[in-house]
Length: 416
Image (cartoon, rainbow, N blue to C red; front, side, top):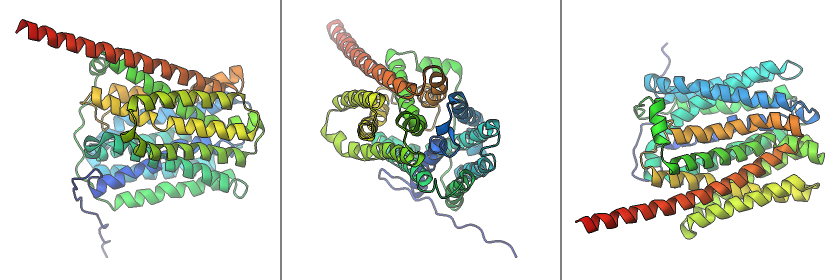
């Protein structure tokens, strides 16, 4: 007997911010993205790295994740165009589930090289997922960039929070392998939901070339905004990837407690994203951005010098809450300065920002081996100071740009 065709949800297009049902479900994929990208920071204690000073190997795990994400760049647009959004999203979820099952098999005492390969597969799945999600939510982004980025950030943070709480809650109940089998259930359920959802056709991708990227980054404003996102995402992911190990080795916390404080970091980011939605219409965005960066610097200083749990909690809440509004505010500024920016395409600004987020925890493996575990907080502190300097430069550049435009307009009037 022939099998029944899977039920599909017909794409209905709404005029509101949330767009079609397919777009809303694609946006929910940021929850799974949070699970995939925060997995490594949460699972490291289960792999017993809180008892080890082999920080270079930890950095290599992040390098595997980077390699997988880069490897997905040429493949993902082709899959989206040939197979469609539903198939690509389901396939990405399937690859992620298989990767988690493989990592469960390759848990210690297996060689770390097996797990580095597994992290590359996780990164590949995340890259496929991101490309398909960005294509599906492009209409929503064009309607309201800040709201779309904030909702995406909240869903992503919820996925990261879920991962940290899940591993912390069952750390002493299940082995590392069993924990990863449970984690594999999450992408399996998401893949089933995407398989039963019908999406509108994906938007056409135009391949980028090196001259186009260079041309996009030719203006000072584009360079400064790219660098700001580079360092800011690097700060966020340096802490997210290494916080549990830092708290265990620097303050002597148990793995369960350090994972709970990692969950607190994600919770602060999540609440900060939600609060910024309410605050943004009521506060000047430039003041809010500057205040967030300054608060992040103080939070990193507290985490660097504290020797007790109260100081750790205070620093984590300050850093997480301060980091929360920075990314959506900078994306909004990019959208106002560069209207052609679209989230569904890997343009120069977005690619450089992603590189910063991924390279920082990898680089920390080298610095922690060289300088000790304190480097885990020293690097984000230095990065936050750089972000503050870049904000000043962006403000100066904007003033000069406005003055030039006014002078050009005055010359035009005189000539006429």
